Length: 112
Length: 117
Image 1 (tube, rainbow over the protein chains, first blue to last red):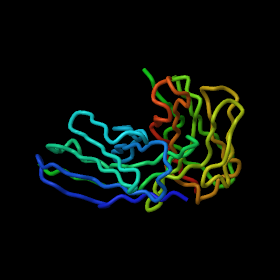
Image 2: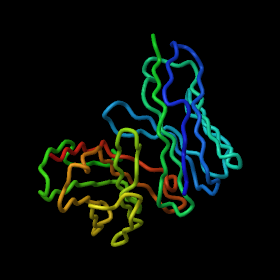
Image 3: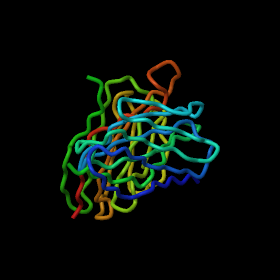
């Protein structure tokens, strides 16, 4: 059974810092990996999706990488801002396309 | 606007009183799914549907039912709610066909916060 782990569980950084969030998964037979943002009490907003054949995806200040063989993904946030404060969730899609397995999330706080 | 909608957004009910949470998407997606989110347990899949009249269990299906009579709608039914079903529920949808949007990129609804007393 796929297991997804996110480290650290919480992170506090000063504004302007570059930071990396980590996601690891146990079964490398994945279809894709998706990073989401969740604000308190709100829904999930998709940030980036990486197909299993891809190595990375970029959107603005965000860059996500995928190393399927080692079961790892990272989300890089450049020049962090207080508005980036949220919980970031990593989710792995299985090959059948019928299930996302989520990590526990990293709660990020960016201090002004 | 492409979106997944859920209703109601907030619901307080009593044990045993049947309820339905509706989910609708306007993106013509084949795949729809329900998740629940609980502190310390994260997001877990309840049921999913690959297309009309095709549904299957996820990780935590006990106490829930679903139906998929139309492509756009995927209601979640709690026949006899219990306090351990108090949770934040999310509906999601995605296209499962290559060439249509990004296959399996999931879009989530705003969530339904359910409290069962």
